[in-house]
Length: 315
Image 1 (cartoon, rainbow, N blue to C red):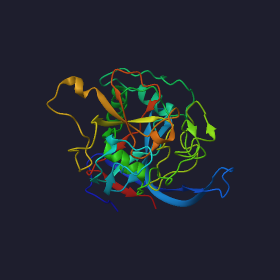
Image 2: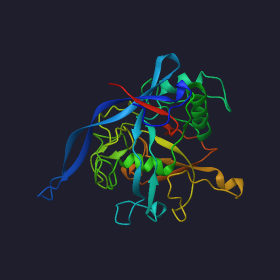
Image 3: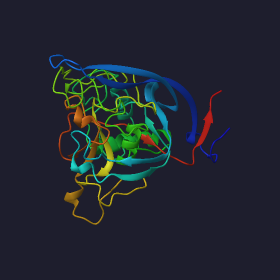
Image 4: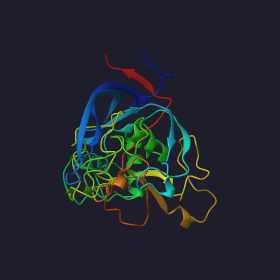
């Protein structure tokens, strides 16, 4: 049965299916001996979520996961290890339901869309330093990410866009309030970051020095999203603000108005990357980049949110 008002166009019909996945929680077991290191215990649970598949040119698919609406506390308290003042003040945000890419956009998906007619700017079909279809596309500017969204929207008839910063953090947390959706700690067994296996512990260096295939760690958060911590930074739609004073509480992108254009040149990055320490991969951690900078470790994932779409369910 349709879940919302029926659309007049076939492109607005979203056929939902369910998929199963594992969610991991990291527990740190402290050693009783000062000479021995702490150990970690990874506990996995099976979950399921809803998604739909978008067909891109060349039989390439884009999987979009259903993210429920809700309220959450955005930002981090001073008690969080390695937190920074730009993550405060914490504030309650209401987010409407939307769909988000199960993975960061891959190189195969990027090439498929790069072949579509130009909307505003050209797209290099092969911009990434590390080459493989299932690796996340990287070295992507904010304008190029917007162009990808615009071309995909025109091709599919659905409005694809970048997530707002609030949507991104809500989706990353997956209902958690800890620094990572894995819990208080993170490990290189579950995410692609540079350096320490365990957050805030300066031991056990694991440096892959490259991106990893999307979904390669075979664990997602409770919403069914993969690679939200590390691998590549992800663009958001928002302009950079140095803190959350006067931030919107409705989940919308926070765009600067009526200021000099130079103040609009920094856009939000989230999630950290393969070259970043774990603290930069926290759910609340914020990054930014000037639009003119070369963003060698930056990719993105897309969002679709349309209350006018018809939601159908496969039996």
